[in-house]
Length: 162
Image (tube, rainbow, N blue to C red; front, side, top):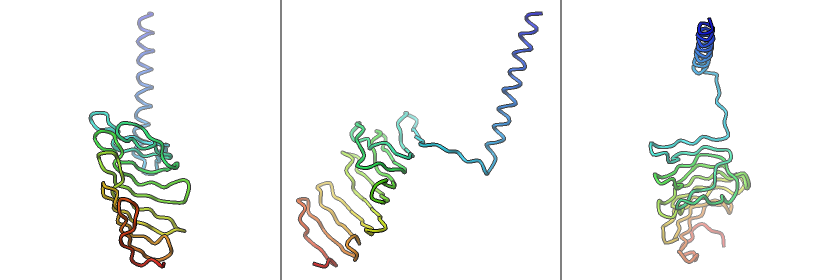
């Protein structure tokens, strides 16, 4: 009798779990269902975080070390096979900026960057590993093209009001 009661209890538990699982599976197909989270990390087959979505996002991983982000931000980060940040699309909590970056695989330096700010306009930066930059911007209220050498001097500027 004791064994029969144990079997009945196990069977009822299994049926209850199965019914619950079927109910939840049906909910997954509901097109109005919304998944809410503060973050999502997609890992590759080796367990390396390759895509990070967060509000806020983590600080950048550079050469295997987690660094501090300049300001809190939310968005999507793309990481290389070594887990180091290779770019992202973020909205920054301070300064009202949206930023799109593509970073180098070496030390994580930005190679391509777009910054958009309703009040300050938009800027596009194309950056060489030696630190020289081509910049197209409207941050001063008018279009401007600048070539900036690695020492910070402007070697070409067109459209700037001096």
